[in-house]
Image 1 (cartoon, rainbow, N blue to C red):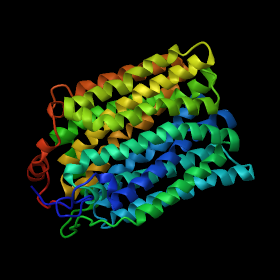
Image 2: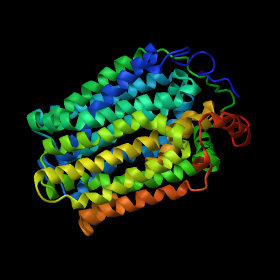
Image 3: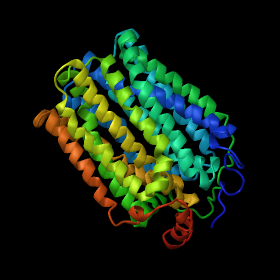
Length: 441
C-alpha cells in the first residue's frame, strides 16, 4: 500500500485517544461547524427573500435554487487545476473569504433599498463558485489531516456538527429573519465564513507532494479524471446512486420552502423551528453512524440511509389541520430524512476516500461533483416547473419516489457488499495501477 500523508505520521491524533481531542483537527472542526451554522441562515433566507420580499413564482424560486448549484458544472475543471496547486489549505481559506464578501453584498443592498432578483442570482452563483473551490480542495486536505483508520470517525464528527447546524441553525435563522429581515440576517453567515477562514488558516498540515513534471494539459487531465470515475468499480456505482438521490432531492428542495410558506401557512419562525427540530434526526444519525456500520456493514448502511432520506418526503402533503399538525409533519419528515442522510453520507464519504489514489483526489472530486452536484440545478428547475404544472403535492411525491428508487444502483454492487473500510485497503493501489495513465499526475 502506498504511504500517504496519513500513514507518514502527518495524520491527526497520531496516538491514543479520540480524534476530537487532537488540536489540529479540533481547530478545523470548529471552523467547519461555525460556517455550517451560518449556511443554515442562507438556506432559509435566500428563498424567503425571493418569496416574501420580491414575490417570486415557483419557477423563479426553482431557478434561484439551481443557480446556487450551477457552478458545480465547472467542478471537473476546477478540481483538475486544484490537483496541481501545492497549498490546498490556502484554497480553503480563499473559498471562505470569497463567500464572505459575496454574502456581505445583500445586507448592504438592503440598507440602500436596492435588493433585486438579479442580485440574488449573482450571490447564488458566486457563493456556489466558492463552494466548488472548497469542496475540490478539501479531499487532499482531509487525508493530510487524519489517518486512514480515522476516516469514519472524522466523517462522523464532521457530520455531527453539520447535523447540529441543521438542528439549531434553522430555528435561529427563522428568529433572526423575523427580527432583522432576511437580507440583514445573512450578515451573520458572512461573519461565520470569515471566522472559518481564520481558524482553517491556522491548521498546519503536510500537503501531499505535487509532481508537475511531464504533466499533460489541464483539459486532458480533466478527461482522465472523469474517465477514472466512470471506469472505477466503486466510484461509478457511487456516482449513479448519489446523482439520482441528489437530482430528486432537489426536485423537492425547489418547492419545500414555498410549500411550507404558502400551502402550510407557516411563518419564517415556525418553518425554522420545525426544520430545526426535525434536523435533530441528522444529529442522531451522525452520532450513531459508526455503530450502525459496525453492526450491519458499510454497504447496507448506505442503502438504508438512501431509503430513509427520500421516502418520508411523500408524507409532506398530509400536513393539514391545526398549526401543530402542519408544523409537526414537516418536522417529522425532516427528522427521518436527516437520520437517513447521515447513514448515507458518513459511510459513503469514508468509502470514497479509501478507494481514491492520493495524487488525483481533487480531480476525482471535481469529476464526481460535476455530475453529482451538477444535476442539482436541473432537479431544482424541474421541481419549480413541476410545482407550477402539476402542483406542489404531486411534485413532492415524484421527488420521494425517484430518490427512493436510487438504491437500486447499489443492489449487487461492490458497495452493497462492503462491510468495513479496512477491507478496501488495496483498492486505491489497484486502481492506480489499472486505471491511471502512465504519467500518473
